[in-house]
Image (tube, rainbow, N blue to C red; front, side):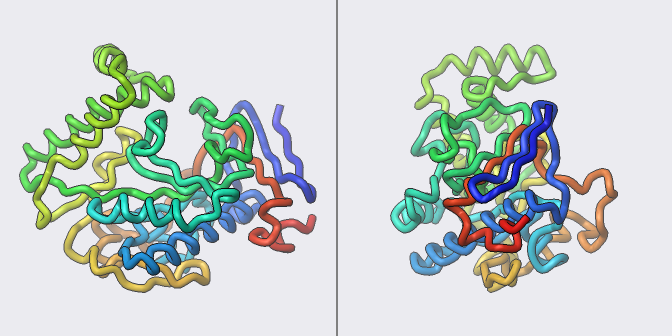
Length: 309
């Protein structure tokens, strides 16, 4: 049975069968407001620490095509070169209010199954359908609304080297998903391999995955990659090194943030005819089981347009 509640204390929507947030709905506007705030604090921290990052993937597309969020998009993606990645996370942990935000990555918490970091809003829940809950309470933020921070790793120049890099990643990343998310591959043989490898210690699992991601030392390679969580996203996770850095100022939903040096070039590489809108059927974000926001904590960010019934 689905549930929807809006009031001063909480904004809640849940459905065990899953749901998508409709573009323009109070739920989507609330999620995007919190993500915009996370982007603002990330940008401020990065500039103060003299660290360059850039919007990537659908967030970059939204900035260029819509001036902000793609209306049906419910996340933000940024990328930072691997050499600056740990420095950015350290600066965020130092500067962000720990009562409001959680900076999450596998280097800090070995049970985190993704190979990239997230800033999460505490006092929220953004529970994705099909994934086990990690949060004991919305206050801990472990399933909270998030912003993704991808380290950008070097990609070998040749096709053979690229295939080898992806294979090493698959054989180190998916055992972690088996261990911490209960992931099951549709390919029986692969699942048996993943299950066997998943018996390794959490520390070994993460160190093997990190080595696979960072093995290429070619700092002038044509491509870099933002390693994703899912196999289906692997081939669409490449970015062109040329035109990536130095970053440039870019407008996003009323903020001045950082984008790649060549915005149109990156969009063409990622999406092809990026100006064209997708079909109505594909205009959706994450499939969720539960969305919850404690509006007492986040009232100043949400504002009266969202909080007023």
